[in-house]
Image (tube, rainbow, N blue to C red; front, top):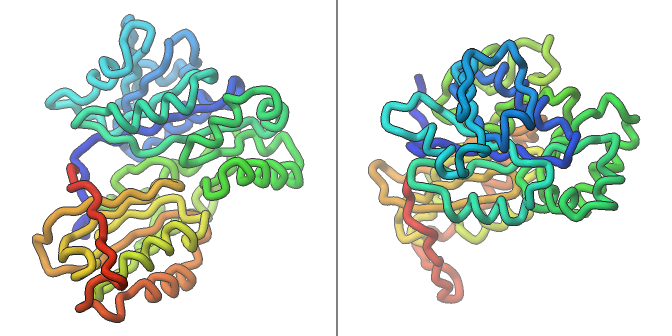
Length: 342
C-alpha cells in the first residue's frame, strides 16, 4: 500500500443539516448502506425524529441504536452533544467516523461555531453539509432565515430531489446558492444518493482500495452514475512554493469542482523551513505546521468531479518560488499558523 500523505489520529465529524423535508435522513440511510467499509457513529436529535431503515437496526436501547452495518446511532434526547460524541471515542472504539444529523430548525451559525471551537482532543470537524429540497428551496429561502443561513454556514450544498424539477430550475438554484455563498461546493442528488467519497474524509489519502477504482482515482465501473465523474489528482514538487502565490491559488483560482484537497507543503526559507500540512474542505482551507522528519517535498491530493488536471498543474507550477533563498518581499513576515495536533 502506498505511504499515506497525512495520517490523522482524530476521528472526523461531518454535520448533515438541512431544512425540514430536504431529505437528510434519506441521505443518511444511503451513507450508512454505502459506507465504504467504515464504522460510523451517528448523532441524532431523537430516534423518533428520524426513520432509519428498519433493515439496518440490529438492536436498540434508550441511548443507542446498533446497526447491522457496524454503525451505532446515539440520541440527543438522553445525551448532550459531548456525551454522545464520547460514546464513540473511548479507548478501543472501532468507530471510524461520526455524523451529526442536525435538526431541520437548528441554528446553523451557532452549530458551526460550537463545533469549530469546542470539540475535544479526540475528534475534529471535517465538514458541514447542507441538504436542500430542489422543489421548495426558493420558497423556504424566501420565508425562513434558517434556510438561507444553512447555505451560508456550510462547506458543501447538496441539491437533492433534482429528479422532481426541470434542469433549468437546477441551474437557477445553483445561481441562488452562489449568490449567498460564492465559493461553496455544490453537488446534486436524487433520493439522497451521493458519492460519499466527495463528502466524507474517509482515509482516501491513505490510499485504501476503493471498490471499482483505478490508480487515478477514477472508477472502472461506469454502470453506477454516481462514480463516473469522481476524480483525484496528485501533484508533487521538490521545489519550494511561494506562500503568497499558494494562498492566492487556494483563495481565488482553485476551481469549485475541487471539493477536497490535502497535502504537505514546503515553503522553504519563506516558511521558516518548516513542514506545512494543508487541508481544504469545501470553501474552508486550513494550514498547520510541524517540523520536517524527511527531505522537504510538496505533495498534494485534490478530490472532486471532472477535475481539470492540466489547469491545476499550471496554477501550481506558477506557485513555485523562483527565489527560494530570499525572505518574503518587502520584509513581510509570514505569520505561522498553529502547530499541528493531528
